[in-house]
Length: 541
Image (cartoon, rainbow, N blue to C red; front, top):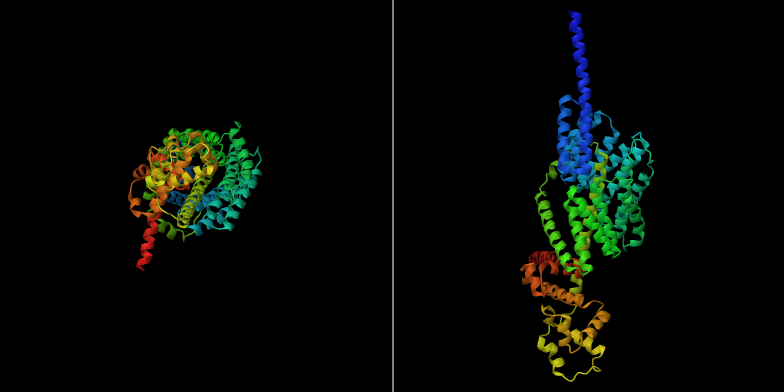
């Protein structure tokens, strides 16, 4: 009887072990599916699979499954820009990562913590975590994995240096981008521990990022230096041998669009921006969609396709408003709580390779967006200096402007010299006629007693613009001076200001204003208002 009982007990124990092993294999399969779904299919669907695997791991005490599912959750939260949850989830997984003594996991953990702290404006802990990540990476045994993780750290560190507005930080950004490129090139294509797709995914991204540095940050802009890096990135992008993550293809497509925009190749800009929008349907990234809309609006305007430019400017304005509202809603993140917790010793969690790549490129986008805002402010200051330095004699009335010209009915073709016409144009520019909606080439030619062909050629030769661009520029100059000189107009709606200076719609006005000044009308008005408030405060003191 005892023998039978012992046999049954052993049978049950063996069956339990087999069942546990089977459950672990099922969880591993779930996690593999989750990683693929997260990277190539849909974020929300990937989240559901991750949570399912996480619960299953808890039920059977599968530590590796808990660690990996927790890591994937961190990637998901990073994509959602939820830095608080990134840090919380990482810290929850920290003891487990330490227990398993996984240096790959610790390297990724420190790096992710550095990124999250940096985005919350906590520079010191961010830098400390980067140093911890570099230290942990040196303990990784596998050579190719070590090169890969070190490349990711160097690529991420540029977000730290970008917060320092000096020459040293600019040199550091390029230095670490090139170090990242050097590390990734040392990975063997046949490496058993690093996938070929992962290597070339980050290789394409890093080349693209260096190219963007020469276009957006290097002074002066060096499109020639950027071209080599973009061509290397495009070669990988177009090679069917490599399967790049869909979301990274979106980022690359937008970067390529920016490159061709800098080259004034607007057809290729439209090609890559449109491709980015198609790919973004799966990635669902508002920031990337916003950048694509902006490129399309600007490029179609340069190609004189006002209808499509207006369409994409409307889409850009709409999504920009949505993003701004979302950012304002998340400002109250508990940063103080994170600062107090930072006083304790922490380590971070392993993050899957695909998530690491996404984090680098997503933050690169935000890095260059921040740089762009800085350029906007420089454009604003330049415009204000121009307004201060220019003498404004005032606008002439129509009678004053054309009285002498129209009274002379005996104008002959011989008397229509270039100098005479330029003098008439100068008077026209100082008049309020520039804001009349009926102004056209024919209208102006009639008022100046000349013909349309001669007038068009003189404007093109001596003003350096087509007739439409010439008139649009005068109208923008008019409204800029009006906003600067008369504060009451700053309270009016953009649509009213557009109509006031002769534009047919708010969208066209906004697009032309940005093209002429480098900033949007709302940005210009907001800064004028802020300056008034600051001046008022100083006067009271």
